[in-house]
View 1 (cartoon, rainbow, N blue to C red):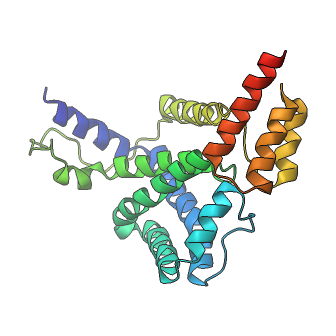
View 2 (spheres, rainbow, N blue to C red; view 1 turned 180 degrees about the horizontal axis):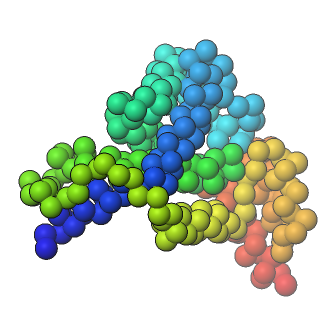
Length: 242
């Protein structure tokens, strides 16, 4: 059987499941709730956080704040994407508009190790991907590998399937656990303040190297990559000294 026809069958079956419909609504509301506050803050011309300018994410957000109307534009796009997600007929467009925004935030959070969205942004990317898959029947016509396939064999969406999709939600739970584990792989975090940063030094194998890193970030305002290099050099020097 044609693989695209199988994909259509799988998607059609998912669309008829009551629990997956509930999950879709939940994701739309959750993603909208994630962008509405931050978007309105930008539209109002307010700073998004009170992070120090020396903190890596603080560097970025302060520079972004001073871009003027571009900062406002980002807020307008965020609010627009959130509102579209809440309108059933426009939810597909909302998911498309939302995806590049949250993907950028996810990569940004990972690159500067920002704890404020280190876990939430990857989960939001996954939720957004789910919504795009949910609207596969609308988006498939623009995919490069799609070709028209017969749909006469697909059942009509009349009666909802009440069976709980246990395997699917086990996969969702597993994805959350994997994200949590992956975000714990960083050897050191800049944290939001110098106090919070040095708190992790108490349990560090090398407190001196950890303090060097925290001072480099929060006192000297050096780039994250340079401070990480200093940290690893301090670790190496300490190991040689021993």
